[in-house]
Length: 406
Image (cartoon, rainbow, N blue to C red; front, side):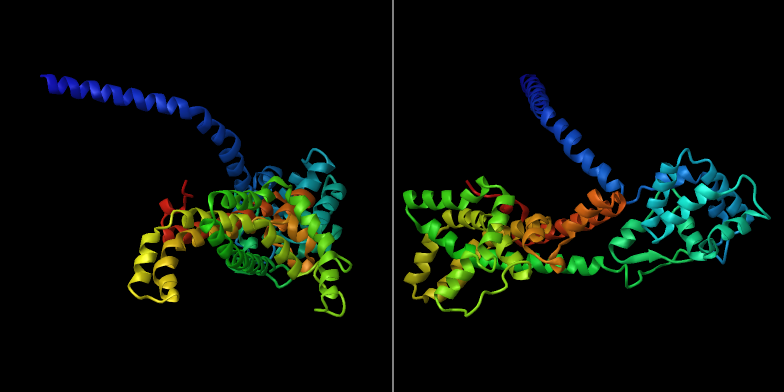
């Protein structure tokens, strides 16, 4: 009888402990949900959200749902579009609708705005003739294909455009025209720049982490402070400083010329080289810290044992040292790579037009062209790339070993 009573008391105590733990975690979880997860989810939903078009063209959407997509639709579709455009409350609503459609086909904004402003109360002969008389583009089946594809509550158009695809006349997915197929090349450029920066950071950070791990407590502490020092300086300031250093009359060029290594100033700014230099400087601490954390806890008994058994230094390094520090190297590389994917300030300041990365275009679509659907779709592509990088890292070193050691 005593043992069941003790078991029940233990179970009650365990439940009470769990409730207290959840109560302590609740504010942090609520804050994360309200101010982190929900805003991100709401923004990413814009990649498929098409409520504005559907709300502005309800009658046209109903007609487009029964249209087979061949040629031009019937008179009913033209009449429904006329009723929807005349029902718009003001020219701003027409401009907003046109801007949404213009993201899928250039020229639709002016076409919609002009039709909404000039449509008569009654058609001349029929609505098809009236629309075509206003603008010959209404006789283009491609315009009606866009209206058909974008008349629902949800649209895949932004996600398809983010991977250089589009829906054709009968709804089939096809490659986008060459003048709009830019995003896969942009993603490849982004991955290439991030891979190059990651490689440079690993090559520079590895020997620095070795020195820090082998240094005494006092020197090691000072080296760690120097590595952390860039985090106390604004990213904008660090990136701007490289403009001063790398310009034609900057310190770097003047130093190279003074040493006699070059006869004239090198083009180090507003090109890919400048981007790699500045981003490597900014992201280098993110590679050093994981390596240093692993190297500091290294089992040196195995190194001494290998050397005492007659193994050459290179053999000890390759067979004993490198496997032990590999998780730190991989984790540091992944941290640099993932962080570099979201950079746009540094490439914009020190790079040229051909050096802008995908994050720059996300900022452009968000702030300049106000095309949140395209910005959200590109963000999903970027988020997917980050997820793949994390999965590859976790598979290589294990998710538990990604954490820094104390």
